[in-house]
Length: 197
Image (cartoon, rainbow, N blue to C red; front, side, top):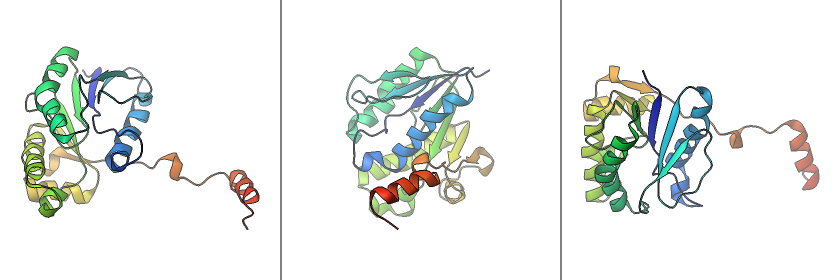
């Protein structure tokens, strides 16, 4: 039975910049809402050493060092994180971005956003591309389930990495309330304040 879920959230960004875009928004959205859906589950979120954030109903564990630098994050993912997982003893581990350590002491779920590093290899440097290609494939092969954020990504996982389609679940990202229409009274007040039609 699953009672305790550990989640790698080291790609949550701090402040403005590319780290606060796509994957960050997805991870933040999941962590802000998932713990509210089932109060019987316990969540431990593994975070970058320097990140301070509010997340409801979660235990937060920060790493021993800053993992903003990709080399440090890879070291943390592959060497330090397995020991953290052995310590906290989760029933399920969710790797929120492509890669998990080779040895995980419980069932593993991984989220894959796209395979641009395979389809368009020129977009990443050789070392980063090779790391993602090798470890994404290995993680998906060892995962109990693979979450793809689109049918296109699911298709690419099957076509480009040979992951069985029956192992993949498509979970399209939700939309933040920031991007939803505002109530008519707020829109009217904004228009009045700024002299807009």
